[in-house]
Image (cartoon, rainbow, N blue to C red):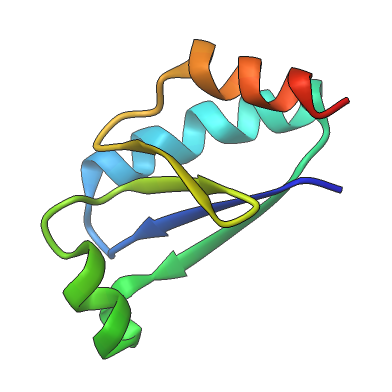
Length: 80
């Protein structure tokens, strides 16, 4: 199963918006969704501090700041 990882932080409204979109797509496209709080890990915090949310598909970064639904959909449909 394809894994989408969202690098996020507490109280990040863009992160909350991204998760709403991804949860809606999850029911339609069938993927695992993982949220990682960058404030809980110093290395993640350094890597993603000014770019969150970042969405990665099986480890490959796909979107940052906003979820581009068409891009996510295209990537996931190509993996079927």
